[in-house]
Image (cartoon, rainbow, N blue to C red; front, side, top):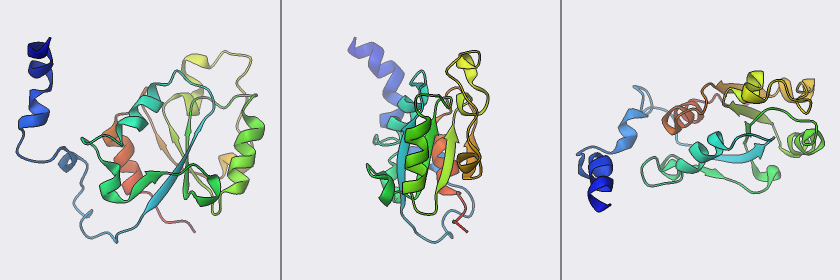
Length: 161
């Protein structure tokens, strides 16, 4: 078992440069340092996007080095991360979360948030209300998107107006 793990994971432990070099763009070094607090809102999904969001906290991607962290209260969050299709059961909770977040910006993660993905024909899927639709600042496509792509969008997210 150890040989199988070593063969598949050895490139992570033996590379000379940190993995996050793939995330850094040409002007990342010149951007002003800032912190970004995220509130995750899962409207019902297959949990693929949640696994990729959890991977942002591991030592390979290490979103904390960029000042990004998850916040448990929407009142302290800068950005709401929305995963999964917008469902009827989470409509009230989603609207309460967006009203509690000051200067609400929403980043939708995954294909399910835009077109319903594999859940698109479900009776539980409803369109997002205008209050939430107008707050969407960015969309990260993919089923699920890679942690590198999620981190790239969060790093280059525009400041609130």
